Length: 186
Ligand code: GAR
Image 1 (cartoon, rainbow, N blue to C red):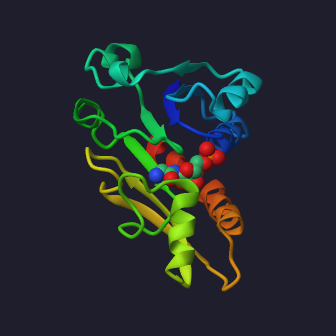
Image 2 (cartoon, rainbow, N blue to C red; image 1 turned 60 degrees about the vertical axis):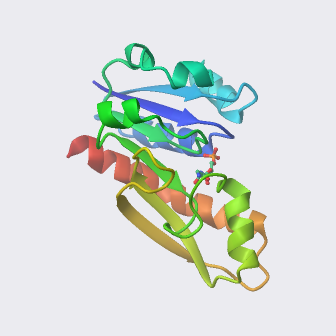
């Protein structure tokens, strides 16, 4: 039995898509747990509906090394729309076992404060012809860990942050579970 933790701050559609993907593969026995830093996050309702344990974390707790005890043994930590910087004690303890998804083609449009629709708005404002997703390892700097995979989509001239977000989510739903599967099998 593998144990995977998902950290999410928002709606949690990626978290649900990942869980759903592995439920369709009953030969892969995986236990999921969700952590969120946002008491109003949509991911909390999703977790309830999916019967997945979901815990709220405070920043002080997250930044304190004692949090390692709460985490325990894990096979993979997934950041799926999680907005806090991961502290160094965690990136060191789980080196190669923490991955993030970013809704743009890093190193462009990454870094602190670049998340969700802010990214899509910046891409459209700069009249980019293409955007996409980056799945990468996590180090102690925002969006700077080693890239695992990128996938691209077209940005139309009349694109809005909402329509671009839709395209990006479709890419995320297609790629993220497959990358996770390869990592935990490899
Ligand atoms: C996703 O598009 C993810 O790439 C992005 O937040 C969204 C979360 O959606 N992450 C970042 O911007 C991280 N910098 P979700 O809550 O519906 O999965």
